[in-house]
Image 1 (cartoon, helix red, strand yellow):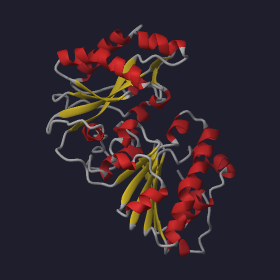
Image 2 (tube, one colour):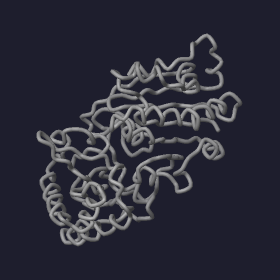
Image 3 (cartoon, one colour):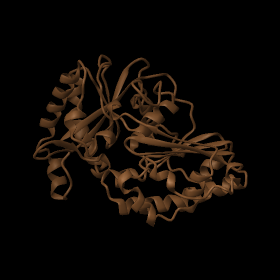
Image 4 (cartoon, one colour):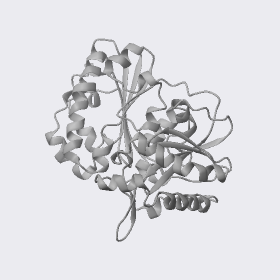
Length: 348
């Protein structure tokens, strides 16, 4: 295998916590991969783009956006994700991801619950979908079902709608992350109608009895025009949300180093297991997850570099405001004069 790119959302710790976290992290393989490199750069990112650095990087890598940073960065994933659910978007039509959500109302602001924590079952997701679908059909913006937490809406005229990705908006004051554009008012009106349909719905009553958050709204994002073919990049995922896993072929949605290396083709692997802990600022859990990645991914890939099964490894590690982009190889790992440390994780 010539090149593997490993994308690790939220693998960069917050700057104010980095020194303390790295004191207790035992990750010699990751340290070697980050210390002995042929190229390494820290790229800052403007959150005004309404998405996260790894989302912008991935959209660019999959040719779903024209640039990884700056004004052109977009999260145009919807139509491509539909293919992964066996749906057939009509070429030239515009689709959006529409995800059931919980909006929490605090004293001073409204926030979006991390969608990973909703634990929405297929039965409940399908019931809420069927409740809402007639309304969307009536206004000429039909829904399609992907899974419990991943739906799609066709809205050909909404090319101006500016949306934030749910992971970018999670934990933030939503007053600066709400929909913008000429059709934002129509989208909010649609949201209000669905909120009323779901208010006191039996699904929500049963969820609250089980101690779960009510599904009281939806989050719309990812608008894109449908193309006739899927993107050609060899994408693999692990612990990814449904929409992201759907961008990969079914056999590549539970990746391991052995399965990726056996595939032979140059590949991108997105490992999403750190996101939930980082968003919740559960740093003990974050350390456990990163320690697991050391054993399951970093050590095996370092070994593959050294014995020639892997030609080059690129690491893309990010948090909300930046990503660290490092490339290493068998030759780079021979730079014995470079001390093996995790210090590059502190530079963010």
